[in-house]
Length: 338
Image (cartoon, rainbow, N blue to C red; front, side, top):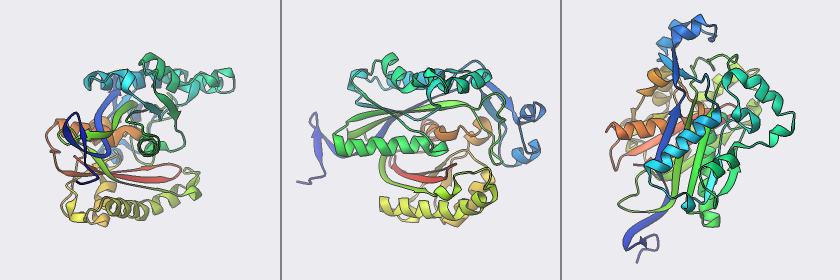
């Protein structure tokens, strides 16, 4: 008998974390690139950003990061018909402490609250309480920027292997304060939250989105991305290719095995360059959300994966490579068998 095979309720199963479900929530208001330029929220000419593939982004007005996080997580549990009592771990990866409860227009007050006892008002434990996840351990992550949700998956998988965690909820929620602008190195940003439900083991019939490889590269030298902007840009592509090489090795895939690249929503021009350098001959880039959603920071790849599956583009049995870069600086990738 194959030791890697187990049985759940009489059905064959294979160990290895899979993403059972994905849900997301966007801020209700949206703005065009031209609207953002008119309000002084961009550094670049809007025509440049439109040429890079951007059209509209979602902008939080009244919603707080916590509102979006709760909406995404509650939707996920409902869609997956998951009993909250069966969730063993919640990993929150988003706006921290009191800032999570401030609307974009009140971000300054939220930031000031970090200098008071309000810094102990934590969104992760509030999510645990309001979602009824009373049996779940609680963790929160920071300082991974756009790779934070990848980091949450990494922690959850490690705890599944090391502590026997069976089911984990990972939630990321980010926003840009009202006066922070809407551009990050030629990319237009959206306010949104994304939630993932991970399972350590699933029956073969239900085991979609199995994580078969992962890679993360951090280069602390680039800890100040604004001051080192040109150096970050110069290092982006070669390090991205290195991360892709490592995830393919970890998954045991050849380059030609990759069917889809599921991106974070940065410039389509930069993706065209990266795909040429990465030499993925059969891979298609699923870029439909770049113009209509913009860059949602750490949620992009997983929102895109859900939309690609729901739209029938990504089919069962195909192989998807997810890649993202985050300020700090971090390059990370996942190999997923859909």
